[in-house]
Length: 319
Image 1 (tube, one colour):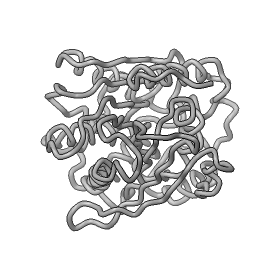
Image 2 (cartoon, one colour; image 1 turned 45 degrees about the horizontal axis):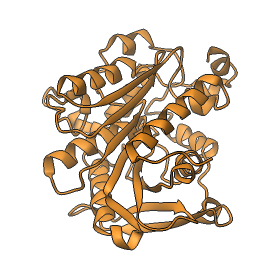
Image 3 (cartoon, helix red, strand yellow; image 1 turned 120 degrees about the vertical axis):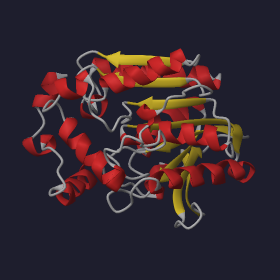
């Protein structure tokens, strides 16, 4: 993994600051180009729709990108997904080619990807409320979408993984949404306090470290940043009750800032009597499987996630 990291140019490893956010967004958009619905359909392999649905009360509409295998019939289970990007970058479209290739087609799985509002233009709870409103709309329109509203997996990566964890908690406590059958959390951003051993140990290491994470939390939380009474829906590591959660998959690299907060979250789920599958990939940095997708470790990580999904769904993986 260190060789893959060293091969990157210097701009890829530049730390995020409030001053360089605009440049970082431009670089991110160039590195993760947004495919069109036509491109995502891949000559009919997938059916893809962009949907504008009502947001939370007082909020704007939320854009959802809905996709399913083109040859699928009947009601499909659905992965409700939040993209990464530190709460400040990324989009609902660019994550889909990989998700459709790795999970949707092999597992007969529908996907709804959420275009939540980004920080710092929108602070908590705006992005989370976007995700919650989209979730309620999705299960409320399950029949017309051709999905099974009782077979929902909530998932996300990095900042999107943190939103997925927060959404699962919010959905549990409000009781107005589905009962998800699982939550898939890839290297989730969970703890605004940044006081774990790995946060300090990995400062200055990898693509995304403690300083960049601090900028992201400040952008997302605004005036709430650093408050001792921050709710778990803002930073899921603050949760004191992780009971009643669905089966959970968490994976993280051993050489990244989020390692210890992810391990602690899995441990807290176990202590609450829940089901969590935890993978700590040795020597892996944040985003390793995107930077070096053909590396043996990245292939193992993709396989482990797919196998967990197949078990939760009760479906074999189609070749």
